[in-house]
Image 1 (tube, rainbow, N blue to C red):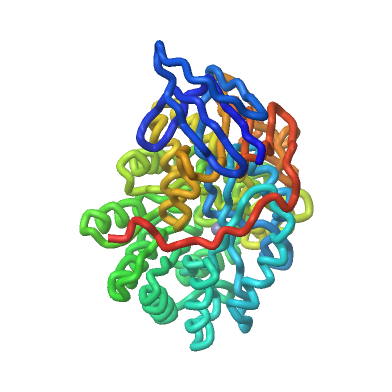
Image 2: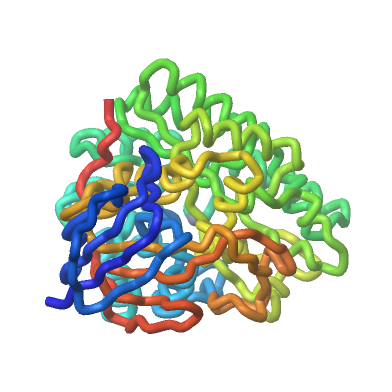
Length: 466
Ligand SMILES: [Zn+2]
């Protein structure tokens, strides 16, 4: 069993910072030793890493990714291999990806299919959520088997009629089933029935540019669907997690409900914190790069979202990483915004874009770690194996240089996509080294990992339930 000693760094956790050295033995953290003046402790290890001036963070956990996901006749551009490698470059050491049930197929067969895609291909550890798109007696029974297989979060859609859309009745049934086993239902909360009418009206009147994607999905319809999902969850007594919350109206519904003690949680994503509908309105079809659902909102929603992160009404920041290349994929929607594949790349830059929020005074250092690693671990049953730097936890450790400057660009990123949503953005802070279960994956600008190092994580239940 090889050992690594990381000296001189500042450990940042959800509860604060500590000047400490960290000893890793094999795949686990063996010791976190606070440095104290006058106290000299000699430790030896096979490998010494000098982290003077650096932060030591628990590896990032991105609970919302879509690698090689089928969408509208094409696939998202990152495979599990390229996507997990890019994640590691950005200091993320665990992803939870979505297995997608196609209508008429079984949940367990779907899970097998996603295992086959990921198994042996990932640079970092991974788990799955299950997208339930076909609610029937068989599916409902299979949900319990999924929980036993370590997949205990089920995503449903109030958007995308004819594809993933579930009726209120179907949602209620699935929530009741999930509640029996303690599983969490994750909701894409937008009123897809109303949105489809607005989309049809726009197209009929010749409004076809990418910005129409945003204008036909107004924030009120996210607020309405969020409230409806919360009500259904209350009736079913089921834990609810709102994915990729983007609108102030939806945040207000979540905040009010959390005050009542109901088990309702929400995440947002960096694109909603840093980008806006102005990007969707970029000329010459460039706005297509920013098409995702829910859409980017007017800028004034951003302050509400940052505040929601501080007050814990937003508990997690994930990426909803779902990259489509501009050429040949986004271009499918030239002349018809509704044909633009929905999704944006982001798995590589979540930690950096949140650190930029720390630098801008939106978040504290411990809160950065909490929303990016510790809370995701607890929310999705991985804590304390993941999400913390402590003896006994997996040695998923990121050495982060808070002073380094970097410019985000498609020319230098590692995601398998031909554009960056943040092209030319200069930010402060950068990953220097990423360890996954004690193994150095990224070291000072070089990739040293291997496909197949990442293992499947069977997860426990949400640890926040009241
Ligand atoms: Zn998604």
